[in-house]
Structure formats: structure tokens, C-alpha cells
Length: 54
Image 1 (spheres, rainbow, N blue to C red):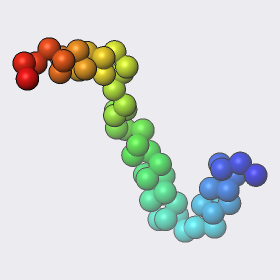
Image 2: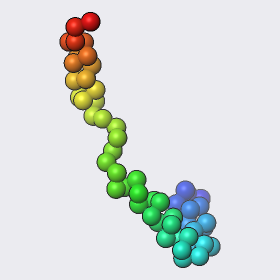
Image 3: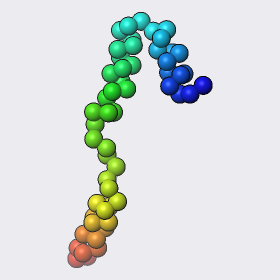
Image 4: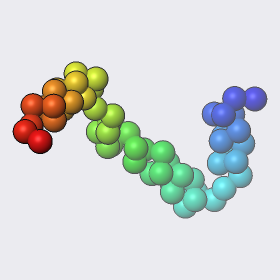
């Protein structure tokens, strides 16, 4: 059984109000931008930090 199947088995037994809560919970991360910076951004940050006088 896949994760989606397991979630479906749990959700289909819930009342509609709880199903909507689950839906909103699942949709929330989709609305947020990815917090993982691009590798190039990391390299630029490292280069900047190395350029600072210590």
C-alpha cells in the first residue's frame, strides 16, 4: 500500500469538517516558497564571507 493509499484510508472515514482540515494542511506547504537555497546562492554567500576582512 502506498502512502497515498494509507492517507486515503484514514481520510475517507473522517467527517467532512476533518477532511477539509486535512486538505488545508496538505495544501499549506504548497503555498510556501521552497526554503532550500540554490547551490549557486550558497557559493556566492561563501565567497562573500571569505571576502570580509577578519
